Every structure is written in C-alpha cells, then in structure tokens.
Amino acid sequence: MPQSPPPPTYSAAVAPGALPLVGHGLRLLRGSAGFLSSLHAHGDLVAVRLGPTTAQVPCHPDLLNRVLADDRLFDKGGAFYERARDVMGNGLVTCPHRDHRRRRRLVRSAFRRSQVERFADAVRAETASVTAAWRPGDVIDAFPVCYGLALRVLGRTLYSTAIDAEPARSVEQSFDTVLNGLFRQMLLPGPVRRLPLPSHLRYRRALAHLHDAVRQLVADHRTAAPTDHADGTDRGDRTAGTDGTARSGPDLLSALLAARDEDGARLTDAEVHDQVITLLAAGTETVAATLTWALWRISHHPAAAEQVRAELAEVLADGRAPGWQDLPRLGAVDRVVSETLRLHPPGWLFTRVTTAPTELAGRPLRAGSTLVVSPAAVSRHPAAFRAPAQFDPDRWRPERVTPAARLAFLPFGTGTRKCVGDLFARTECVLVLAALLSRRRLVPEPGADLRPVPLATVLRPRRLRLRVAAL
Image (tube, rainbow, N blue to C red; front, side, top):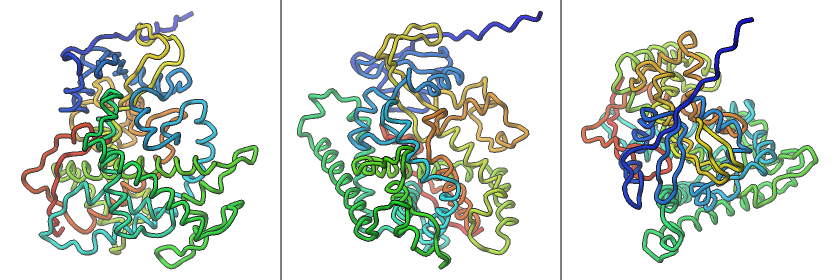
C-alpha cells in the first residue's frame, strides 16, 4: 500500500536585533508590518521580545491557521487584550473563549446578508454626502476623510439616522486619542501608566468620553423607540431608506437589543454597551485605512486603474451610484480591495495566550505563553504568493487563486473567531471605492509620508493628500 507522506516539519528561531529593555519594540515602532513580514526569513515560528515579554510569532500560514482555529488552547489574552478591554470591555473581539460562543450567536444576527444589503443604502448616502462638494483641484487628506465617512456609515447603521456633525466629531477625536494610545499603554509598565502625565490624562479623558457617548447613544435609542424589543420591531423598522422606501428589519443597535439565545436570554445592558464600542472600534479605522491604502495603490498602478475604470463605466453606465445589486459585477474593484488587505492588513498585531502546555513548530510552550498573531507575518510569504511584494489584484481572479494563497489571506482571521462583520466591511470598501472612482480621479499630492503611524492600532500612512481631478 502506498505510504502517506510524512507530516511537514517547521523550524523555530529567535529574531535577531533585540535591544536591552525594549527588545524588538523599536523595530515594531519604525516599521511594524515590514518587520513582521520579514520574520519568515528566520523560521516558521520566531521568538521576539516586546519589552520584558518573549512572544512567539507564527510566520508560516499553516501554523497561524492552527493557532487561530483553536481559541480554546490559544485564547485571547496578553498585554494587548488587557488594554483593549479598557476600551471594548468584554466585547466580541476581546472576550475570552468561555464567553465567546454565546456572544457570537447573539451578535451575528445583526450581520446577516439581508441586514448588510440594507446597510448598503447608508454607505451610498454617506459617500454622496461627503463627496458632494468636491470639485476638480480640491485637495483632501485621505485618512481623516475616509475615517469620518466610515464613522458616519456605522453611526447610521447602528441608529438608523445620520450622526450629527458635532457629536460625530467629538467621538472621532476620542477614538483617535484612545486608539493611538492603546499600544503605548500596552507596552508601558503598570506604575508608569498610572503616572499623571499629560498623555495618560488625555487617554483617560478620551476613554471616559467614549464610554459616556455610547451610553448616551443607547439611552437615546431606548427613548426614541420605547419597546421591549421582543420581536425587533422598533425605530429601525419604521425608518425610511435613502430612496424613500420603508426599511425592513432593525438597525444594528436594535438587532443587538432584540437578539435572543436558544434559552431566550438576551444581551445585558453592559454587554450591549461593550458590543457597540467594539463595533465602533472595529468598523471605522480598519475601513478607513483600507480605503486610504487602496486609493494610493491604484493611483500608482495604471493597469489596475484602467480595469476598474472600464468596469465602472460598464456597470454604472446610467450614471447612478453603485449599490448592493452591483456587487457581483464589481470584480475588479473587489480584487483591488483584496490585494490591499493582503499588503496592508489593518489589524496588524494581536496576542493570544496558551491555556495549557503545548508545542508549536517543535518548540515546547508552557501554559501562559504569549503569541503574537499577525496577518502581516504571512501575507507576503513566498510559499503562498508569487512576487509577494508586488501589488497585483489579478492574483485574486478565481482561476488564479491557489489554496496556499487562501490559507495565507487572513485580514479577518479565521475559525470561530473570524470577524463577524467581514461581509459588512468588504461591502462598504467596495461600494465606497467604486463610488469614488466612478466620477473622479484622486491623484496623490507631493510629500506623502507612507510610513505607518507609530504604534497605531491600525496600519495607516502618516500623511496622504489626494487632489481631486476629473476623469
């Protein structure tokens, strides 16, 4: 009988260049994605030092998938999640394995395909609102514009209405302060974090404002839609869509309030608060960063830009804005989004902690060992992608996608903890990008600084200004 091939073997290594006290922290600060995507040259499982902590980085797609697939053994934990829980509480992203299954069952109903289809109206309306005043020759600051757009889209889908400008601005500023300070808080020792330094005080004030704003959002929703939410019939069901037709089904907040477990239990008020914060944190910067990088990438790749323009000219020949019904015909735009997510995965560093002794790549790991989980560590792996550093949207054509590429494409994670809002995020990115590129060109201005913002929670360029030009 033919023998089965031997199981693959993986190598374990230690990353060179650690400095006293900070370890590899400075290299992460200066070039986070570049540093992580370079580690596979040393081995399949590479040990790095983050301050006093030694962490293991799975750099082979097989190993990273193994870690992501077993959230019982490789549970959410470590310094990153301790600080992230300050922001998101025990929400879907931050909760440990023991709480995750129930929360996911209750939250995922808000992201059914029928719900996302409705939310496409909000994407179209908010994109039109943001771009209505743009004229050829105007210059926009890409990330802040995309961030404000993503925040208003999420606000409208959470609450069925547009967020007023001033509250949106204050929430945006609080999120900016909190998310920019999150990794600094993660790397600082506890006694230093407690010092009354100006940066620490700004972080705490912004965090308190953020929680207050979300509590007010939930309270306003309850006041505006007095119901026990037993069947989901509330404000979201009665609000007209952007085309004047009645909207069916609840908004996100209503869906969270109405969701029931198998035993009839619902999310508590504290759980709803944590899920709303999680949605705001996970659905704004990530979308904004992806759109910003996509606009930059496509402006430097004429072949990809021409494919997109030709597709949009055909699909939107009548001059209308793109909608949900157009998604199956927006393959070129979708491929640009996929390739952008591969090269610039927005969530670049997470941590897991082993709950029992185990081994990975032949390296024994005791209970409580820290792992750094990063899509960037495998997204440019040469075993998965030909010319991995090259921007090539056509690599995602169905006939060209390989199993190895699918295994290494992990911007939304995988397994039971895969991002529950992945369809929503992809839909938003495709529709916004299609709307922007169907009516104008966005040309990078001189002086762009594409270095990642130091220790930001989401990979984004420091400065990218775009000039509006006619097609």
